[in-house]
Length: 201
Ligand SMILES: [Zn+2]
Ligand SMILES: [Zn+2]
Image (cartoon, rainbow, N blue to C red; front, side, top):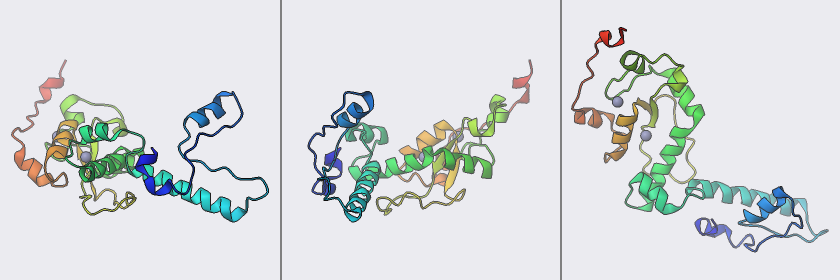
């Protein structure tokens, strides 16, 4: 974990901590301890504490932006990215897409059909569940190229998002430019043929 945010290593100590307890919670803290700082009682001022807490939050934010504690090779495999930059962009977009707040807002603003192949879960599968559970995925369609670390909150709903069925979503992430929906549409080789008799008993 420390290797991923090396610029914070000099501010804190990586030594194990001893909280002097055998209870579950403190033992868990000890085991999960990555960075820490020990203060001498009486020497601690509000300013020092505030500055350290602030730096700790910055370290945490940087860690999350750099894939958290998920091993790099696993993330790289999932993204299919060739380099760490590409992997980081993929992780950023997946984080935005997985946010339940974003998903809810996008589904509220858009018609619940796949914007590439036109799959309509209601018509094509007789899906009768609630909209937010619809088997469609939210795709972040704004290129993340050039977006610097931490700039994950800059997106517009619904303009920056596309609703896609799981297959189209997987496919668009395999294309060179995952923000190019028209390119994916051109690649599509099938048309959905609807026949309402499918739903007759
Ligand atoms: Zn689709
Ligand atoms: Zn996506």
